Every structure is written in C-alpha cells, then in structure tokens.
Image 1 (tube, rainbow, N blue to C red):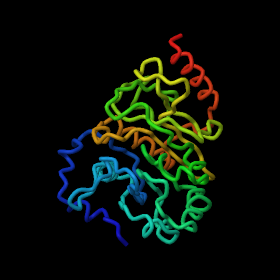
Image 2: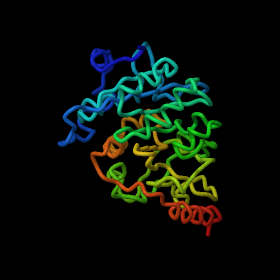
Image 3: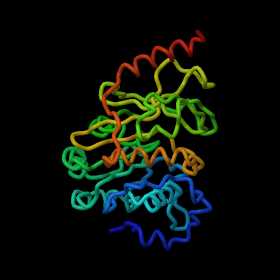
Image 4: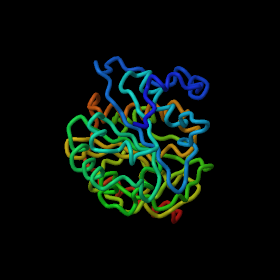
Length: 290
C-alpha cells in the first residue's frame, strides 16, 4: 500500500490549525460509533490544482482539510493517495465506505476491471458513497460510465479563479446547502458542462447569471446530488482556490454533503430537471440583458 494513514497524518509537519482554523468546521453529536473509512484520490495528469499539490512530501491543502474534517467530526478516517493504479483496486475498495475525488485528467490509468467494479458493484451498495470536488468533472471526460455517474463533463471555465461570482441555492434544506443561505458570493473558478444530464441529478445550486460579470446564455449548475443504485453521489464545482478550502462555509457544506452520503441526514435527491430548464431560460434572458 502507498497510502498515508491517519496516525501518520497526525505526525506530519503540517500546521493544520494555522492553515484552516480550529473552530471553523461543525462538530456532530451523532457521529457513528465506528467511523467510516474514506479513500481520497487526488491524482492530476495534465494540470495540478494548488489544493492538491503536495510539497516536500507533505499532504496537499485539500487532503489536510478533509483529514481535519474527519478528525474533528469523527465521521470518518481518511487514506490519501495519488497512485490510483495501485490503490483504486477491487480488493482495496472493499475496505472503504466512501471515495472522495479531487482529480484531473482524461484518464487516471485505472485498469478497466477496477473501474467496472467501482461503477457496477461498489458504488451501488447501500452505505457506499462518492464525494467529488472541482476538477473531478474534468476527469475521464471521454469515458461515459464515469460522466454518467458523476453527472456531467467539464467544458471550459469562463469564470476564472480570480472572478467573484454569485451563486443561488435551490435546495436550502439539503444538508450540503444549509450553510449557504439563499445566495452567496465567492471567488472561485466555475465550470460549464457538456454531457449534462438534468434528468438524472438533483441540482442544489447554480451560477446566477444576472449577478455575475461574465454572462452566458445557458444554465451553469454548481453542485448536485444523485442516487446511484443504493449508493449516493455528491459533487460540488467549488474548490479551485486553496482559500476556498480554508472557507468555513465550504467545509461545513462538505460536512453536510458527506453526512448525507453516509445516510446520517435526510436530503432530497429526486431529479429536478425543471430547475435546470427554468435556469437555462433565465440565463438566456440575463445574458441578453432583458
């Protein structure tokens, strides 16, 4: 195994408190008696985002943030890998309840049998879940089983890392969204998508084209959830900037999403294509200045 395990993480020379603050994440009263086990994959092939860039053999900022969340909430323990060929195998996946991707690349070079086991067996099991951030939709863009599972494929980012955008929340009752309120602004890189399947996902929040500088005449979802067999999927586009991972609300949103994936909180995952349709029409109007 090539995985840095939790006890070793605690010994790593990373100043977690300095990086992320000590009281920002929520503490759960109903953590499971036995924490779930999570495999976090942060492989990058053609572009490495700063939150997953390891330096001097220390864990990357996103890996530290997720590790910290697991430690403070007692929801899960984390094994982090940047070698999915070795660690994303059927035998190894059987040890985990959760898989977390912050990945990038047309292919992660995971052998087909392992991918097939993940999509068709592991993820469809009750109690299993997939959490993904940012460029995980810029992963396996030409591989239909992957983008069919995650919900869509990266198709550029007209809203860049230095842009401040306005996001509107559609489902304020979902555990992953409660922290955001009705609407919020954030400086982060926002993707547009192809292979988008609104009939299969429950959109949680979207780019508000009327209140964002760069205007495009189409719907831009920012986060969504879906059921996948008896498993669950939660994706958020946010997370390009390292500062996003230090944002208490972003981390609380991740906690809510993970709790939903684990079945600890209820939240609607019914596909809502009517929301995508309405916001597509709204975006056309907003882009035209009407």
